[in-house]
View (cartoon, rainbow, N blue to C red):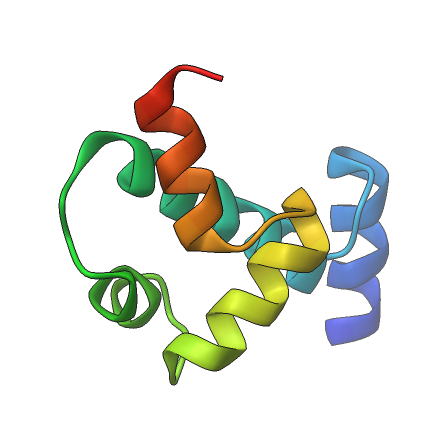
Length: 78
């Protein structure tokens, strides 16, 4: 059942499946921001976000800065 799966997943990974997927998507996007010149909207869509605004909100909640600020920070080395 879904409930059993969610419980087992939580036990194995320390968070639920949706939280794990969100974390994985945001970490992947953060790496793309550092390593590529892709547009932020393209990174958002490529990581499962329906639009750049939704991605930016989720990214800012997780990392405390906007995706564009994170990109500038990574490029400046600070």
